[in-house]
Image (cartoon, rainbow over all chains, first blue to last red; front, side, top):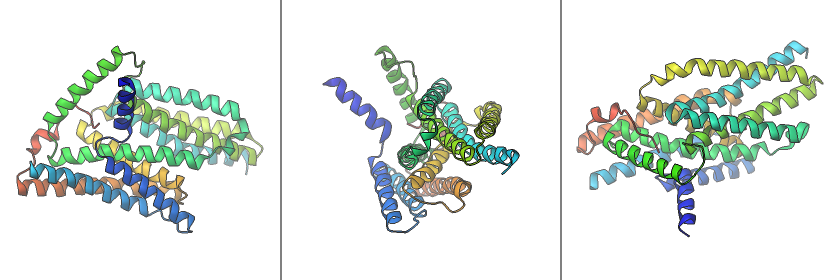
Length: 69
Length: 262
């Protein structure tokens, strides 16, 4: 069972990395983009906004954690 | 469309795709591990050759949109991870000391993985990035050749145009490899994070059905925009950290000699 855990952890770390919220945000952002496109809106602008927000929130979390420690 | 026009059209279209693929390989090789990046490239070319020979003209039926979505989303997540750490290190919130520890840990993990027989690939990150970039762009080149060649009933000229573009762009990539190696590590990683994020945004949004204004030219706006965003966050964090006294001295983080962004 240990190797299964190692295998899963390797791929989790490989794909998701340090901040799972960023990966989740990308998936949600892409889902929203696809939804808008399906509704007839060419939402090319949405993903760049999502990326700007995700990166900002992610580095902000580290900054706040550094202040608390 | 004459043969010359067909050649030029396919050449230009394929050159754009080749530049994208070579950029990814250069990024993976320069910032991570050249051997693994080359292994990823060769593997992608082999899989591509098998796919193209097996499907032939039916390659036009592959769900390219779904591929773009998956590959783009992965590149975007990878790119954001790299960019995040580059911003933190550039602003002083991540010290060289941490990177040294991470590097030592990674080397130890790599050695342990090697002893466990994890294969001949030393750096899966570099391998996967190169593989995805080359495979996706290679498929697009194949699409272009099949589409334009079939339309004009002249596949050989289309193949010639594509081959010329790929050879020329690859040669240019090899030529800039040495100068790239002299770029400071943190700067290089900042640039790689920017490129991966920009390509990730572009491909995944296309895969989700978006049509970019200016099509491929949108990348020329996306790449500097992502770079400016990251530089802006770095400056903001540096100022905030300096005011609060939480950031580590910048001199210690601006010129790391080793470490990775993973």
